[in-house]
Length: 320
Image (cartoon, rainbow, N blue to C red):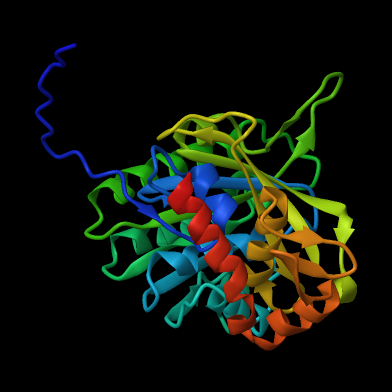
């Protein structure tokens, strides 16, 4: 069939960044091109303690190893020691900038409107060398009317309006930015009353604007020593590739450290049948070590001991 000619004009390329998380990259990839799409808004949501912010920092670090990451923290959950560690797990060595939540007036701290913080964050997208930023979380956004009013005042639709305007602004800036970036919007998954499924707070426009929507949940049956755990990420929207139930990836998280590509690779191998997990983990019948031993290696940064898993995944890619 002969196809029509498409005169591109100023249409940005669809660029993706590999994250080193095998099943995740395949889940958000398309037609053999693996990795997270850039120049778009990614909404990452789930239940409490699923590792959403940790994964968000890791993904931002993948965009550019020596760039700048922005954080708009609405949950006042920033840990100055943990954040660099979580972003650094991706190999990121650049700068991390937080959006100030307050300004000084007459020698007193005054809370900034979230709309003003959001504008400052969006403008980071126009900065050369920026990786983008993470907003954590949309569920804690307060409108100017809510911030100035009394508890119990009716402010119906005000939060959704501000988030909608911010979403549109981010998309506009992402398209004209000199270099590709990504915006990670952390959100909460709330159960749908009277039915199945879940929804996310903040109105519907941010869902329209998002090119990627990811539902992340913790697999409590797969918890390990020292609080480490396995999470799964399900792609519920993928503008460049389409979403379906098979688009899901594994993410392994170590508390105090962040996403572990090494332990994630091991679990991906087990899921694919490239490794066996019993009392020990085996590859081609050869024992690599017990799970807790592998976890200690990953925590200490002994990445060379996981080469067998990365090699197995690379060989699987070549054959697939």
